[in-house]
Image 1 (cartoon, helix red, strand yellow):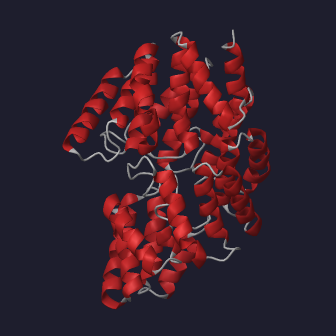
Image 2 (cartoon, one colour; image 1 turned 90 degrees about the vertical axis):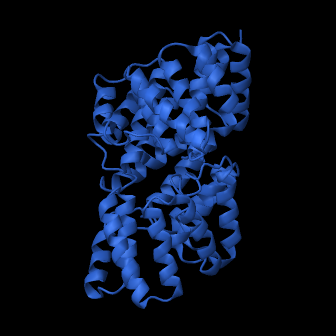
Image 3 (cartoon, helix red, strand yellow; image 1 turned 30 degrees about the vertical axis):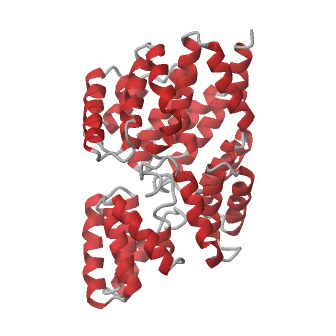
Length: 411
């Protein structure tokens, strides 16, 4: 479970069969259901764990189950508060410590603009409790540093984690992110091409890791290679990944194709719309909201975007959307972009660019909004601003795509 490797359900079920009063086995099974998006099963299983822990659990077990219960029931702010307190008492309880640390973790979805730094702070606070060869902690500590700008340090940790446990999809994921942030797209492509065939398609990160490979191919101009990865592993009919990953991976890949002036495969947008349409009918999960807005905008569903924007604006007004006004602003911006109103897109994105991390996800996932701004700047004739943005990006990391765009704007 900690390595996102297929097969965790069987041993957990065996443990429960061997000892039906083992609260933490029930809790771990609930967590696994939650990771797979099986919300009803997760809620039922964590209720069993809670009853057992209340009856015969010690303080750590009761706290462990309570934290997971808050997370599974969507009480994210309380879950995060409880995680931090729990980790202060039992820092090596990694099922709990891991809850805030991923791209879809409690910190990423907290609405904080500084969640990348918060993850680093959490890891460093507890680093002394983990050995240098703890593959799980190395993975998340490395990913956190790479996302927060310490790319070389984070990459070294992720590489060490993978070296200690090859069957660790989370380490490959962390390493792919570090390579992305370091401009090592070709290395990432080689890593994924060598490693992914040994990872069963039922693995939760299989399609998402292929998405990383598709982005690397797109960046170096290999459109055919990018589309082959998308069609073989990423599109809804091919991926067995988490529904939120399938939504965001498909939408952001097809949106990048569109922004680059490339044609998506026939029917690709419609397939994603059919898959994702029932998933997030109401606003409230910012990372899903911005991707649903891209999907609806790209498929001509203006009214759906406007309805979502209205719901988000009401949540902002009520003070119940932690991510704040950046979410409806991005939704409006992608609608303007899809409809060819590039100046409006620029006006909407520029003031909130520093706030985009509030929607959650990783740097690689959020870069699509900066890409959208960049293309809107170029298409609306704002070359000086586009050059400045490209110069900042190229100073951070090499990019064949950005270098080509910059050369086009040199004159």
